Image (cartoon, rainbow, N blue to C red):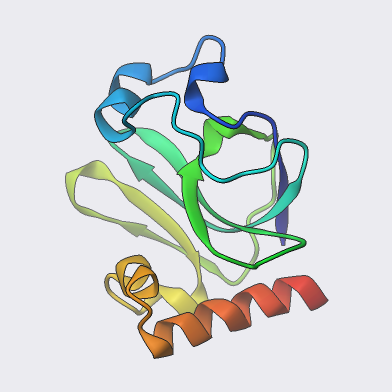
Length: 134
């Protein structure tokens, strides 16, 4: 299990942000807040690189359990051990995704989750519940 703490609410708060040009292509405005709470802890359910920038799939430890995809630069992060049931996938355009085994076999799983695909939502909720009880 990986936990991390929210340090910033928007990319515009991060000093010396690596990849700022790439983030600006994806986040409009750069001061956009990602519905996070500064200082709160979040479970990490996976990671993704987008145009060379690291992003995290996170869910609050306390609260709504809603999965979000957010820039990792918003969090305090140091070396973390990757859970043994996670897999890595190399995507097109040099992107990399790191996910739990329960989610790796579902192509387009995050889009399906956002679109409320009942099967994908159930799998993600079970993964979050496993983290909450583990």
